[in-house]
Image (cartoon, rainbow, N blue to C red; front, side, top):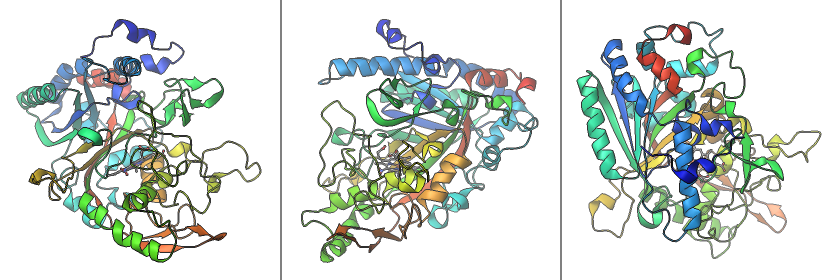
Length: 506
Ligand code: N7H
């Protein structure tokens, strides 16, 4: 594990109490941000052996403090040397989440017995991802019947162990060690999911070729606000600071609706999303042809131009809203621009209303403007934000390579992971009310062409002072292959579960 180094502690601002939390797990607010990750999905044999295993494992769980200190020191070193980056700085992190059946087994009781009423968020956790599949659009080929893990017909998963490292050799050894310790405690690894950042120029990008992990919500008490613009993070205009309780239960207020075991934890969604890169790319040409024939797009527009409209950003991460004509990447060492607004683009003539980033974070879209004071700075998507911690799986697609592992048939995609305080009002709302709602935010927009159940989207170019609507036919090339709803408890709660100290938790 990373040892706190001399300058790291100076980088931690005492005015940001959540940065020094020894209790909140490190992946939630700070983020493991490692090139290699493995998710071990575990089924325990019984309460006794599960608790014994937990006693061994909990001391390894990375807290927010250690991860935040490492990340701050790493970023500082990178700023000092943007050419080579930090040399010799590496860390290995461990995280643990439990599913509802896992919580029942570890607490040996009904985890909701003291909940005054069972809030919808808890109900979704209790039901699990497979039971909620229809609501989030996991139907047809995306349905639980085709899942590799998490479906009712598959073995029950009690816990998910996340192992993350800069070093694939360390990670392989850690996986082996954990598997043998689990086996010695009668537990079964029901599924193992390996993720890794893509190599070479695709580093930091997902399989379709776009920079990922650009826009994340910032968290009060964890991120430093800009003194001149307190609603946003210092150094990252457009990155709004939101109450910590949106992501960590009880972080900055009483959480009476939640039982004590939930305090300091966060609900986690895990989704294995397969990406058919060849199929996704192949649809671009014919659709672009339709647009060109109708004279709706510049002659210079190519497949990447159209793909960028589907995402809302260019492959470098530069937003269409800022740079509509071509991809102008950020200067080396700088993050893509996150200071964007849709307020003056109500019809989506620049950033299409269907584009992935507009569907999942409509920001200040006009549908949210307060009726009587439309000039108030406002983002209607604040309550719906999620913290994303996904990582790609599988090798990149490269049609020029003779090696079949880079071919179209090799499994690849995104191990999507997100954290939030409320599964229903955050992740599920995004999927149900925005991503898959063809009428959101207005007109017959269509579903999100990346992750939604798409067939038609409405492309709305503006020419000669008028907005037209051209219908494009798209297929879905992202498929759900497994899903889990879990809970990432505070480290102290894991200790209590490990020692059977559960009465005060329920
Ligand atoms: Fe998305 N992609 O490669 O195109 N996503 N996403 N996502 N996503 C984003 O800001 C992608 C998925 C969000 O604040 C970018 O990181 C892919 C799910 C949200 O402006 C790119 C998959 C959900 C944002 C991708 C996938 C979301 C976002 C732009 C699946 C939740 C921030 C770069 C295979 C339901 C929006 C960035 C904002 C951004 C891609 C899944 C949500 C490039 C390929 C399941 C909230």
